[in-house]
Image (cartoon, rainbow, N blue to C red; front, side, top):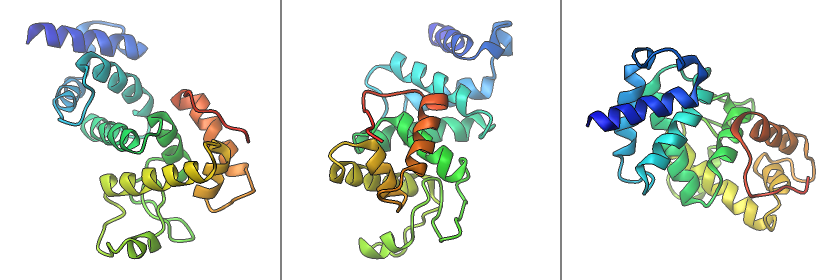
Length: 195
């Protein structure tokens, strides 16, 4: 147990320069949230990889989501749903960044809802009219599934898939915005874009 605490502190120290003081400066709530997250059954098969990923992205996401429990739980769900849909979690984070600025209650002018800005007609289309698109897990499940579908239709072209996701097929301003956020804030992936 003590070794686990030391490992968590080391990961947090290396992932966030603000923690570079002493081990006591590490946010105890974040350590608890990370510990709970790695015990989640749908997490990484390698606990160290999971902790490193969480610490890395938790530091980046802190300015949007100061509550470490919500932040770590959301990251865990993003990772799970992205993996389920065979998407890079960093791409999903970039979509959320651009779509809702991480506001789970965001509503667009056109009525899109939640983190990934899902249009309510999808609930009717799939026969789940009672689904709550403001619930993060539901929203991520819809958004990742829809993005994967458009990636298939676009033969793997992320720029085209993002344009379709946004309802702006053949116009790429939105795609460029998401891809810029992906590179600048969330990291890159093995997936490439043609637009």
